[in-house]
Length: 234
Image (cartoon, rainbow, N blue to C red; front, top):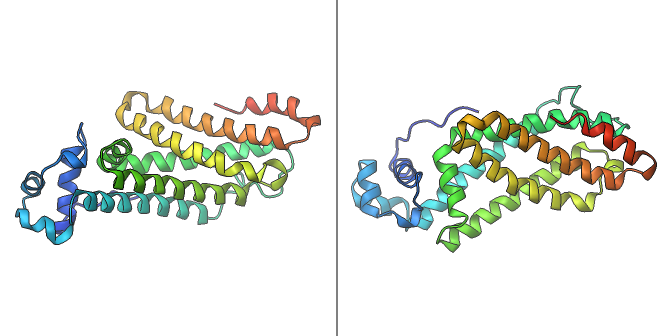
């Protein structure tokens, strides 16, 4: 992914200014119109040419951020898969886990790269999950739901049906998306621990997938294969 270009138009300058001001300890609702316009180097009246209020600005930030992340993940899905990572034709659960581990590492890396490139917007967005604006809280929940739906499609596309209970996949995806949101925040706020956080995120997803498979795989192979499969985790 390429780094976002410097803002040029009034809309982008206002968004960038609001994110810079809110990225430390504040929420968008705590900002003042004149404060944001001054930080952006614009006349305060410019704000209303682009946004009706700070919820409107926040919705624009969320749309830009979520759209970019979903696009990046879709592009990864559409790339021809490395043969070593393909799950097509795999019949052994341990081999499937080994290959799934590679897919998980790539996907986690993509998410962490994206949030690093959009650090201010991401931090503000996560803070708004518990902020004072019901509009932004509701929109962020929708984004989580959309990302989870995308992940459900990913899992059902690549994991052979004999290995996972398809009814369990939406729940797994919802948990992964929510936990990745906070792994990503830790990744940004603890640069000295980034390798460990990346590994923890990968292991968490792999363990969830293996748990779903352990329920589905016949009892005759579940326990010995489980012990063997756990050995592939970092």
